[in-house]
Length: 181
Image 1: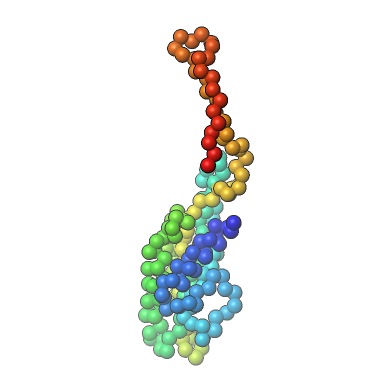
Image 2: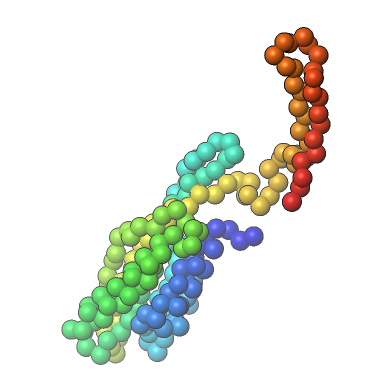
């Protein structure tokens, strides 16, 4: 099974691909290659960092807060309209993400972090980028729930009953098999 970080990143990419943003189908999870102007507008999704704290000792469970960066890159014919274009793009992305901030119960919480905006005007057409950070909280058990927990299966139960006049002899002494599904 994949790490929950990957599942979260994949869920975000899928949501943004289906959202109909300015990026259309140009949504990339962890792309390393530089974007070319002909590929714009585009949307990049990165998992940047993660804070971890113990949530429960037994069974061991961790509360993890993952920072996911969404980088929206677009170009405009005129520098005067670039800010408006980037704001529209950011609104589309935020609206999509927060349509279900729990991602079908994959995460416990998703909140909007900081946003950075950068304008590059040294190219043929002005290019701008908006970086939106999401703070995503999820819980993870280690060892994972899909692995053995170290306990034997619960197969039988034993019962002994000594009625109110306790004489030390059991009126009922049963061993019952537990049905397995």
